[in-house]
Image 1 (cartoon, rainbow, N blue to C red):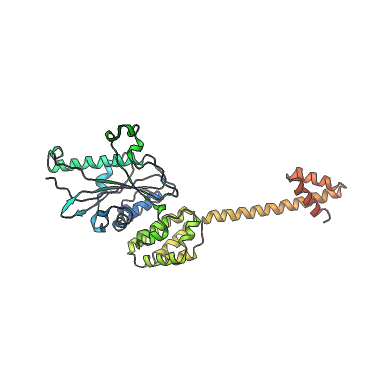
Image 2 (image 1 turned 60 degrees about the horizontal axis):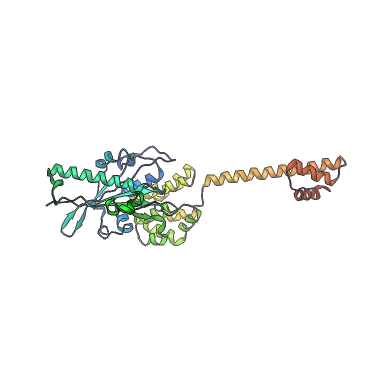
Length: 365
């Protein structure tokens, strides 16, 4: 009889992005080879066994995954990278050992991280599934030649999971039939499966806090898309929760949280030196306190806006002085107020009402 050992696999894609950094030794060791902020954050989250286990237990509604522990997770990235190299530059693949009563079995899951809706994700996942099944068959054949042709041979189940953290609802198909023509007519003759969609926007901060673990803090940070989201994170009870969680977090998880927050601050376009100062203190377990004092929201944009406002104010003052000077010259030349109004309308593109107001204001000055 075919003996199947329980595992669960995970794939994280690499996409090109705006921000780049030279990989540190730590990121090299963890296989975090790409520099896209979202991919880097996903790799840090799902590349860690503790956070991976928390995700499977809390966000995937499959009973057999509710008892997954960090020690059940094995990294097999190097085995699967060659398979996906034509579609992705790098992926993370994890094997999770699952026990079902007395009988061990093989469970595979692909976790695809998306920040934007990808309308072809079900076909992409289908190719991944086919890759894994082909590899599994090859491996079983090496151990027992001809086993895949026997009546009792079975392929391991595959759970395709899409983790989506974009601001809007996921609108792409999660069923393969929805991407194949005439599947409604041909029905059972067309292969079909459904992706498990985990959509971050469906979780409120309170629902995330109910998880009471480190991943919930990262998820709350990942939810920030605008100032309103940030303000929610700055509530006193949220800051207390973050302080309580980070106070007991292992040092390496605190480093991961710091890295995720760094990505967030980069998205907000905050100067590098300020980001470094902020994230350094997170490792000192002062994240809640930092949120209480942190006021920056696209700091550089705010500064640019402030400078532009100052320049605009200067332009207005200069223009007003020019208006006054023109009115005085027209008056000195013996022209009428009506002529002054017409001249202002022509020279400064003022409306008749605006020009009349200026003449009335400065004619006697």
